[in-house]
Every structure is written in C-alpha cells, then in structure tokens.
Length: 488
Image 1: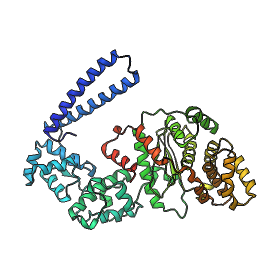
Image 2: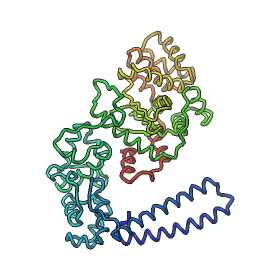
Image 3: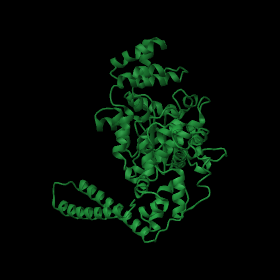
C-alpha cells in the first residue's frame, strides 16, 4: 500500500523499470533457444504479476488522493490500520499535516503508518480516528476499561484458547519477545489487546465485542467438521475444538496458496501407492511419500503445537488437504500418519466436503472405528511392503506370546527380514492396541533409530514453504500461516 508522495514516486519509478524489463525480456527470450518455454513463461508471469500489483497500488492511491474513494466508516478492527491511512489520504492530508493536527512530529505519524499502527497506544488511535472524522460502528470499540490483556486472556481461556498459545501464534512480534504484562502501560496494553483480538476474530469467528463483553463465549466447532468427531472422556473438548478451528483455518489458507496444484485421483489400493513411490523416487521414505502426496494435488500442513488432535484431513470444494501433528521426531511415525490420512483422502471421492479428525492412538473411539482400522492397515501394508501381518506373526511366535519379550524380539525380526524396526514397532503397537494392550511407549522407544536425521516436521514445513504461493494470501493471513510454521 502506498502511504505518501515519496512512496508514490518510488512506485511509479519501479513500474517503469519493470515495464522496460518485461519488454526487453520478451524480445530477448523469443530470440533465445537456450530458455525453456516453461521457464520463460514463469518469468514472464512473475513480471506481469508485479506490474499488476504496482498498477493497483498506484490507482488506489490516486483515487484516494483525488477524493474518489472516501473512507468514512470503520466496521471492524481488521480494517483499522489501512482505514486510518486511507482516510488521511482521502482527506487530502499529508503525514505532516495530520501530525500538526495532533501536536506531534511528522516522524511519529510516519512510524505509526510504517508499522500499521502497531506502535500506537489505544488513546492515540482514538485521537487519530477523531482527527480524521472516521465513523466507527458502535460495537467495534468497547469502553477502554474492558480492553485489557488480562481480560483477553481470561475470556479466551473460557473457550480453550490458552495464554501461551496466544503469545506464540497471535502476539505481534513487533511488540517484543517475552511479554511482561506488569511492565506495559495501560494504553499500550489496550492497543495490543485490540490487535490480538482482531487476529483471534479472524481465525475463530469471535468478534472483539464478543471477547471483551461479559456474555458467555462459544466457538462454532461445527465449522471445522467437529460434529462428526467423538472425543474421549479425558479429552479437553474446549481445547480440542479451539485448536481444530485454528488448524482448519490454516488448512484453508494452504488450499488458497496451492490453488495451482493438479487435483488427481488418489489410488485406493496400497500396492498402487507403494509402487508409485518406489518407481518414481527409488525407495520409500517420509520425504518421498510426502512428494508423492503433493504430486496428487494434496498439500500437507505440518503443525508442532502440543496437545489436541494427532492429525486431520479436510476436503473443501473437492480439494483435499492433510494436517500432520506429532510430537515425535520419528520419520517412521510421520510416514505412517501421512499414509493413514492419504487413505482417508481417497475415500468417497464423489463428496465435495469431508472431514476426519484424529484422536490419540489409544483413544477407545479410534480403536473401535472400522474406518480407522482400515486406514491403519493401509499404512502398515505400504510401510512394510505388504508383509505387516506376516511380520507381526513372526514377532509373536519368537516372543512366545510374551509382550515383555517383544521389545527384544521386534528389532531382531526387523533386522533379519530387512525391514524398518521403527515401522514394525509402530504396526505392532497398533495390533496390540486391538487386544487392549498399550504398547505405544515401547514402540516410541524403538523408533529412536530414525530420529538422528532431519526433523520430519521441518521436512514437511520446508516442502510447503517451497511449493505454496504465499502471494495468493493477504498480509494478515500470510503472517498467521507463517507464524504457525515457525520454529518458535
């Protein structure tokens, strides 16, 4: 967004440079036989996209400056930063003239606008709104006594959105690192509370007036497909609902940022999947399976927050997206989960909308679900080259029916049969869970062999960063998604 005359002139100059570069590039590329046609087109499209964006910015600024677009009313907090800047331009005021009205230095208004008013106090924002004559809808702002960080944290905790999660995923980085509430002025805290509330509103559908009022808060979990999901008695349903809505919001952003992916039919037979991966990439690994799933037009979103669900799959408007979420760094476990969700993505292709949200491996509801059992057998079949059940029987025979002996026997059988001990341990834990035995802890201990390499979460994250077109997202959504993919 162009905010002043200097930026306007700079943008005009950039526009001319890119126009010349595009003309020169087009002429030279047509004559060159060394440039691949697809590469040439991609480069040309990139320049055309830059031109379109610059032209739109210039047109918007010129229209505002000419009074053709008047910003007179503020309907939500999300609109606040751009509304203040647009209102100043539409009013014919320079940054210096607005500063003079407020008794400030021009540099202060420049700093406010450069940071989209992140550094402005709540009182200052109200003064600027009044100085610009912007009409504010009654429910946008509440009495300042109610707008505090403590109120924000307390109210959101009622619906399962914890303070640490807010600071990690929503708190503006520009406000500093570790938050010390007692060290922040009341005005500054109110301004930060409003900024965070606007972001929370975008993700969870709670308006700032909802958050800072005294009425009971409630999330619409059905929006993320939660209506189909039965949780265990020990599950924190509020936290699960909140995190599922968050993951669903991010999954929709990923679909938007990967709209150019082909939407191919997903094979339903495990032999087809394994053969496709091995024939294309040479052998089966988490990274190769990840590349294969993406090649089918199914983007994969990895998350590394603790708690809540263990994975999810959504189909929206006929497009599939998989969410992986494991705390372990075992590539075998991530591979297993990816293939498990791929099975879900292959089912009922005639449906435009479909949802699967995974509870923990030991959840009774998951163990009793035939769909979940089939998805797990599908993943086990692929990871163990069609020998999953055979290998389980070999382990049980050598252990002579003793579960205590399996921790010694599984690595021995895996080495002799030339299969991954981590994958065999994972499948053995699943098979024992069907008998009411919880062997997941032992399986996790046996999966340490494949944790010395690249973190599978980082592998999936980096692949998403490479393939997604973040330019498809607006700045707010882009930052929310990038925060979710950060190492913090």
